[in-house]
Length: 95
Image 1 (tube, one colour):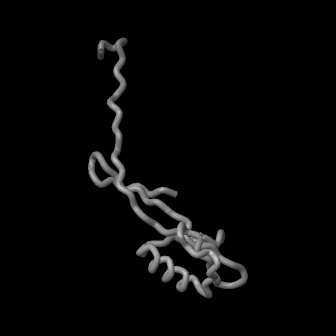
Image 2 (spheres, one colour; image 1 turned 30 degrees about the vertical axis):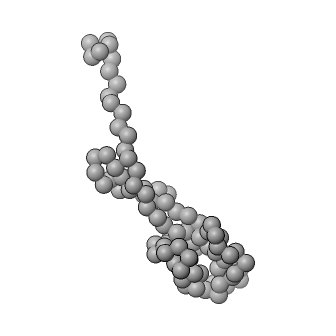
Image 3 (tube, one colour; image 1 turned 45 degrees about the horizontal axis):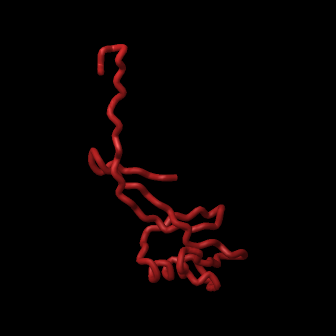
């Protein structure tokens, strides 16, 4: 799911989710899987894994899909809105 927020007439902010950690069964154990993470470490709690992700990346916003057992880092990106001019028709004498 991408959330877009309009900043101005020409730009909007797009929310980007990056997979950060996956649950290791059984219990509340988590393994970090984002780029550069040492995926051999299994943390004993979600909070421990979030703290590790924060220390490595500085990310403070997360999204969790508990059924899938995946936690995502949430970042934002500003994008320019490209507006196409309205189509003109010679049939109506618009060209």
